Length: 272
Image 1 (cartoon, rainbow, N blue to C red):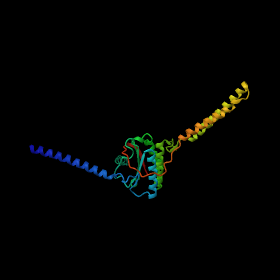
Image 2: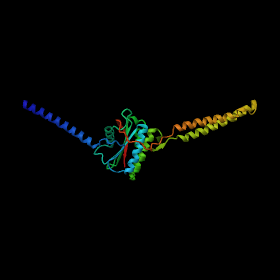
Image 3: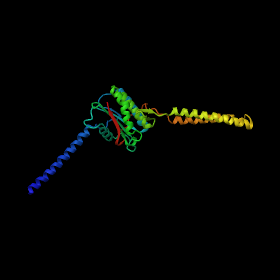
Image 4: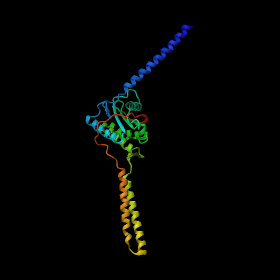
């Protein structure tokens, strides 16, 4: 009886040891599936040589300039295969492992492309989920990136896709009713406001002039609407300049590295 109990106890311990070894091995293997953060640090990492050297440098300079201007970090990662992972899991694990984004702001984005699986996924850090919700990320991958990838234009798909992410994070672009990324009506709507103000001022001027004709004849107040108009136009021009979008396509220094950002599952993707 004692021998049987000892045997059962030994078997249970052996099972536990085997399970622990399996989980440990699985963790090691899964860790090897996801590459370490690049050293020296880079925002554009192509492990497949899909992009030319000049294309990688062009993207790198754009994303470095964006990081320098806003502290938001967009990492482009092109891999041969997902090795059995879901694209979303791979992108999120990579973003966490590399620490894409700033630790305090958690403002990182991983733009993942798996060539053999023909899948693209945009993982969005906690701090940018409000500016780039899942629906927006989905429409970027489906309406901007996917058509270019299907045509073999991988650089253009990535370049246009990252441009859309940058503009969404700035509030310059929004999602329209037809599931496309459309520019907000900024300066155009301002022009209509200016015309409306001019119309109101002209009507006010005519009414005011008639009033003064009855009271004191044509008088010294006729210049008032002109100054009102100039003041209003000046204020409208100042408001318009606040909405101008900065240019992130300039150069920048060497990328200083990822800041320890975190990801919670935000983002979306597609296949081509």
